[in-house]
Image (tube, rainbow, N blue to C red):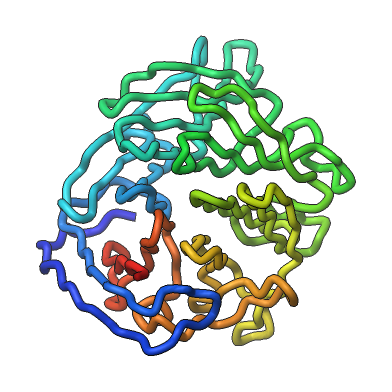
Length: 324
């Protein structure tokens, strides 16, 4: 969807002091910063992700558009427009892009179509100006979401395309790659965590999400409402079967965005901002800090910062909440 560009209305900085910590947040203070973009990605774009201070917009297929536009909301400017092509591909279909912590490198999950109509799956590494620097074929694993951890390793959440329709498959769903694309770890199984809805389950909507922090990784499987949590410090892997709250009309809420706080809480946009209760699997409403609790959608997190929607209703208005 295209939007008429708006003039930047300014950045408002406010400090909210909270008396007590709750909902698994160790921080008792938060600062908020409002971003309303006047520089827009252009064309038809999906809901963006927020990674290391950048908004990543995926463009819907258009031969005249870039695959991705990256915007620095603090500076209100485009920092990169990227279009890539996999080796020997007739056509390349981008799936997701991850930003490295230095913001000078990116990695893209992509599907390539070749002359024989054969398809292959890739990690495509790019420099800041969009130049392809490395291509790694990862078939048959297809990451639907990729993120780069603070240590520079690349995490991909998805499925094996050969077994995607098998609900009993033991194929891993979470891969850890080195910063050059070498496979380091394979975690979880498709039978426990389904990245996307399968009509056979009766649930036919929702999207997968992936969040990374310095000490853990969390992946949400929309196919069966599960969270796969990897503790990098304790070296444990847990599958949380979550309970989605009901919304008016009797339907179950869908999840929109995932974040990890410095205290280790897993938060999501689930009919408001909620945190995962690891004991019960419920998504409990976040009430503090108020600046975070007022949101509905999470676009991503980095360190102690979480980007949520602004309250104006403008899709290009965002609120950055810094937990202290």
